[in-house]
Image 1 (cartoon, rainbow, N blue to C red):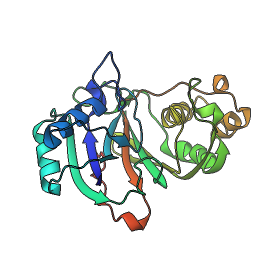
Image 2 (image 1 turned 45 degrees about the vertical axis):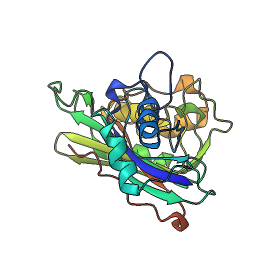
Image 3 (image 1 turned 90 degrees about the horizontal axis):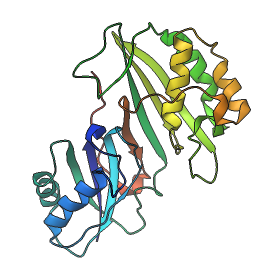
Length: 258
């Protein structure tokens, strides 16, 4: 039997999603919790391998098992064995054609910027702080140049291992609510550090250090060294993963809205 599960986590204490020998990962604690419920080793596959310090409200995973448990037992049994920073939101049987990563059609991320002159306290590990005023209108104008299919080589990490830098961004909205600015981005797939590099460029433009057209110029260079700085991971959330309707997966978790 193949099971799909929704996962929410605060990534601030983990080295990222993927298992690492040197530090705790979200994958390791999730597999350990599910192994205890199944009473046999469980290996999971995820929709998006988030980096160190990155959070998720809508991560999706799957695993195969011969063990029979109710959906409620998988959820509550796993949560009883997970640290407080991680929770299973739902579990659902799916057919063997489903793959958490390869069946996904779109992914959505939200980047949260805390924009005030005084540094944050309890929000320090859940938002990206910018002490200088940001102009969200300029940022949206700049963001519009990134919508569509482009070569995002300038916006990915130098160490990115993706075979192709071409991605299609279908949505990139910049909105403000008081001291918070939200970057909501949807694409068919993402490159390593792509959202954080976009956020870094948009913040420079929002501070008035660059013109909105700079986002397009960086795209045209197709050279990461010509881009801006990589924004911190703390404000980044994987919020939703879309799949074909045939799988009938539950709705994603709540959006980070501070």
